[in-house]
Length: 605
Image 1 (spheres, rainbow, N blue to C red):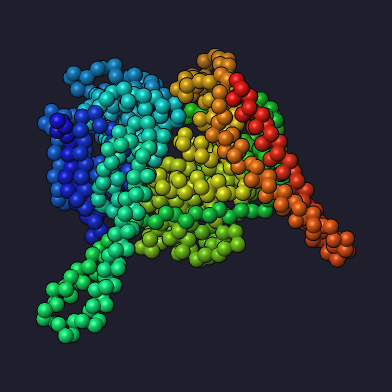
Image 2: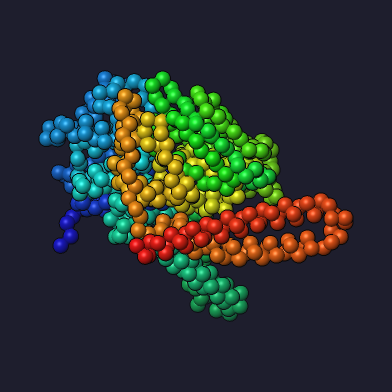
């Protein structure tokens, strides 16, 4: 027999400014359940969670909580100014029977010094303190809204392990796909004000959601057909049988009203990136790069070459200097020693995690346009600002809204829209995933995959790193950086270390500057190809065949003995293209041969 829920929301409805936000939404939280609450930005997830916490009122419906159950909600922006230390703030959340040491243990696990004063804390530190304040009492139900924001990967992994070990009920809102997959046992999907539940983990959510959407589309098509049939009857049958068929006419009117009332699926943002002229083959060459702030080393003798088309991800704990290293590589900050050389025609675009490029008083329609005009050109396509804003899911009513009045996710979309409209051949994304919903993250990953320039990415989102980068640069502590082919998962496989051990050690070196550097553990031999290697092995033959065809066509055109005399410019262009295609084919063949040999060795071993 199923145990009664600890917390229950039934048929919750809430309207803001005349627009329904929640319409008969429900949420049942049983003992030990870990529920992922998912939905698009602006769908009302945070509002529903606050209703569950008893923080805000609702128009209609019912909230029930077991009398002896304890529920804690993660505060978004707590005020710690009244407390002498972080631990003193966390202790205020403990009850008489709670473990007095729990707060200190959690703070240290999240990378905070419990004895640190509350003055001058960063936003991330304040957020982690609030998380410790919420979790220290070990409540029966924990309500967490984006708990991984401002956490580094080590802290995220530590938090995952803590929440799994506790076996207490959890309702979780997060954009971190890997975090949701690891923790959730059920999913509640909030869509167009209503909730639907799946009693399986988030890993199965998208297939389930897509099946529901397909079923809804089929129902919409049936409704359209029925309306068409009723309209046909209305045109030709109502006059002769007016009295007898007034009920059918009313039924048609009801069908039309049902059609109007249907709230269609919110669309996906239509993202494109404007590419500049191709840069040189070598974009950035760093040689023995050194940078320190006092006794805090950011880089010690780092040598790194970034080639055209590279996808480089920077991974490391907060405080390791990832953003500083980006600024060194872009020439925005001078090194203490060593050199950084740049290729020709570099056009970088930087998306700053702090949203500093946005004037909070500027209207949205001006903020998204780099030139400030009414037209935006992306590559060879020119769009009106209004149409471009719609591509990024902004409504006409928002066009003149000041940027400061937008949500965090909306401001992130503004920055993406403005950055993508600028010509670039190096795209620099510093924590781009903050505040974006899962669907927009999926689309952003696809757009980055289609971008023909070079990517520098700083992120703590493990899934996003795996899907977008081909090389991972890891902060290993004390100013040292390790370079590994592939994404985050590939890096862990090559290191042969668990993620918690690797990244917690690096964080401790970043925070405790006098800690001695330890030698990296020897990498364990892998017994299978990485995902990236398997993908390359499968797709390279087709790519090589395509290149061979392109080379043959170029060779045929250059075989014309009169071409040089007739059109020297075209001859030069074709010659340059042929050389580039041959070099690309040779590199692809070499890569495929290397992977094929590796596959044979692994299978034989």
